[in-house]
Length: 123
Image (cartoon, rainbow, N blue to C red):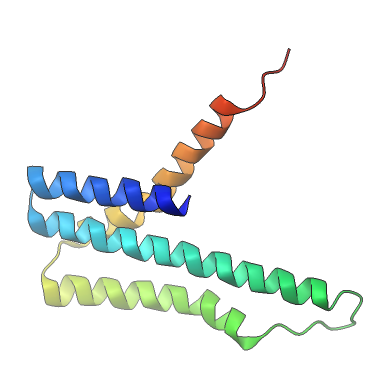
């Protein structure tokens, strides 16, 4: 899904840059990269949480490393800060950044349709 997010988001940003405007295409590209980074951090955070939980199985009070919490909270702060800087200092339309952030959802839908269509046939 990571590569699908990048492919869908950057190809749509290129199409918008050619058809509509370069600034809007840049906004979509920036939003796509932020969506991809958000997904990566979420995946890494959940992976670390699973490792911590399975390593402490049977423990009364399992301990979660602070880096897991930092990744979960930091991804929202990063998205907000990067979106602000992109819109404020590069004069990119906020709509472009928001559309780029939606690339992850588009990738999830495409992957879901693919999984349904390629699944085993039932008789």
